[in-house]
Each structure stands twice: as structure tokens, then as C-alpha cells.
Length: 316
Image 1 (cartoon, rainbow, N blue to C red):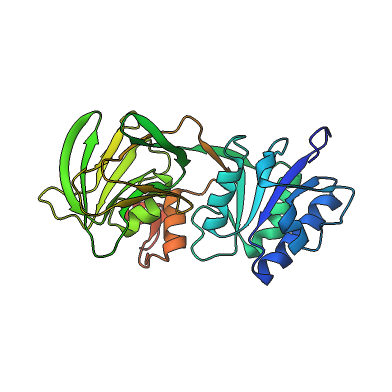
Image 2 (cartoon, rainbow, N blue to C red):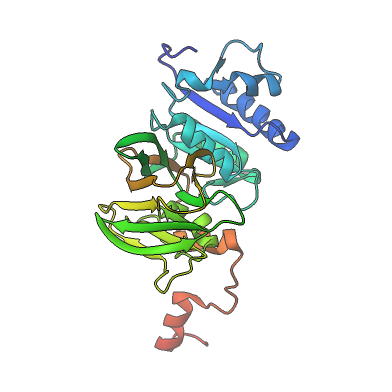
């Protein structure tokens, strides 16, 4: 991997298992290098794209080599899963992520496939901004020992390991026990993840500018089992009861997993290092919700029409 060059460099990550993605990725690499911007690729993805022997402004690296080091941004071609993977690969460097959606909903992506040309132009002209997204630092304690630690951009979910066994847990906020649940699991999410697993579990949609942590029970058999929104300074904890018959599993962003034995304690707090997402447009989050979920807004007349109606300026 080469990082000494003072020139501009972009890391391109692509879901190369799909022909459509490979085609778009090749076009992006060609366009970026045409404008004198060096492109870094993971070696296996470069091979899938037929660029493993490329020279000049194309270089290759490996996941263990800190891929984002020296790159001004990461161009991610795929869906939300690809962006979460990119966040994992570049978390140590906080390299901004710019997603081009070739998946399904693509809530984390900033551009669609038809926007590729304008997206490349924005990169070339540096016509973009980056916003910090709150993350989670997650650790698992077994006794007094830290058995596992990681981060999450969307959520950390504690789930039952076996379909036929309920998970018995006690949840805690800021060092105080809150409730005991027999449940399928517990989701601890960020505002960014509020439209992901949290949303499917019945949790609230939280605008990304809001700094908060979310806790949502999954199919809990309990009197008090409601989604909760707590301060970003709070510490959430889930303890798998020592006498529970079922074991659990921790999932972070659906990518990193750890088996939970009875007695395990999972602590979730605001992450020390945010994930940076590139923005090309300053559209309100409301518009993103409407577009991504195809929400029905027919009949909305807008503020300008209401002013004209209320002020008598023109026909209603």
C-alpha cells in the first residue's frame, strides 16, 4: 500500500458480487483517475474488477493495512450493508463515507445509481460536506474480564441464540436496574440506526441531528416493555441472567458477533469516535424519510400555498 504521495486519493469499496456494481465501480475508477485522483482498492475487489494489474493511479491494499489511511473519502458502491462494512474497515481513520446506492432502501447512501456522474464531479470539485454520526462503543464482560469490545454505527443487539429458548435479561440505565425481561432480545441503537433494526422492532425514528441512545425490547414478556430514548451520556447495560436456560448472541451492525454465556454483561455507551458520512445535498431528513420509505404525502399543499390562501393572495 502506498500512502506517501501528496496527491489526492479515494478509497473505492464495492459489492463486487453483483455485475451491476462491478460495472459502476469500473466506471468510477476510470473517471476518478482521468481527473488525476488516485484510487485505492482492496486487492480481492481489484481482482474482481479486472484491475489487479493496473498501474499508475490505481493501487491495492488489504483490510488489515488500514485501508482509509491517506484517503480523503471512501466511495462505497452497493447498499447499506456495504456502507456498514466500509465503516468497519475505516473506523480507525474516520475517513468520510460517500455511498452510491445499488441496494434496496439505501438509507445511509447519499446518491443513487443515476447520480454517479454528478457524484464524481462533486468529488473532483470537493463540493461536499461531511457530518459526524454518533456511534456506540460496546463491550462484553464475563465476570470482571472484558471478553469482547467493538463499535456500532446502527445498533448493538442482544438476541436469543436458540429459537425455542427465551432469553432472560435485566436491563440497566446509568448503573440502576430498570426491568427484567423474558424476551427475544434487546436492541440498543443510535439515531442513525433508528431506521434500521430499531425501526423493525417498533422503536421510534430519531432525526440524526438528535444526540440520544435508544433501547428497544424484542417481544418482551413484561409489564413494562416500551422503547426508550435516553441521554447520549447514559450507559445502557443488558445482563443475561446466570440461571437462564437459553444463551444469547451479540450482533453489532449485523456484522460483528459474539456468543453470550449466561451471566454475560453487555455495556453500551456513546462511541469515542464518530462515523463521518459525506453529504452532497442539504435536503431535510424528512425528505429522505419520504423518499426511502415511499411515504404517501399526496394532498400536502406546502407553506407558500397556505400563505397565499390565508392572505388572500390568489385563489386557493
